[in-house]
Amino acid sequence: MSRRPTKIERDIPLYLIPDIVKREVRTNGDDLDWVFVQKTGSHFYNIRIRTKPVRRELRSAWARSRKRERLQGDAEDTGTDDGSGSERG
Image 1 (tube, rainbow, N blue to C red):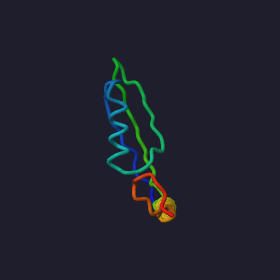
Image 2 (image 1 turned 180 degrees about the vertical axis):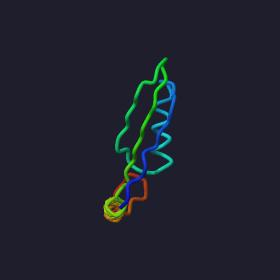
Image 3 (image 1 turned 120 degrees about the vertical axis):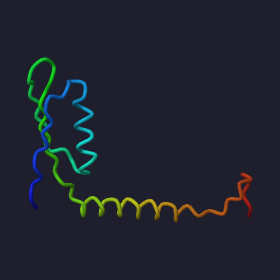
């Protein structure tokens, strides 16, 4: 699997750094690998961001197992409760 190139943002004000990092992770749909922030002067910074791909096959298998557990839990709770609060015998 090839690496993605590092995304470089230049002359970013300090208060925008978290939004830019969040935007990059969201647009690539991957996990954050690393971020380097370098001060260029007068409250401006250069940001280098690298994301890494998520192992989709492991993530989907985990999600399927969690869904299966929920479905089995719902199947076990099949009582004949009529909502009146009394038991019929």
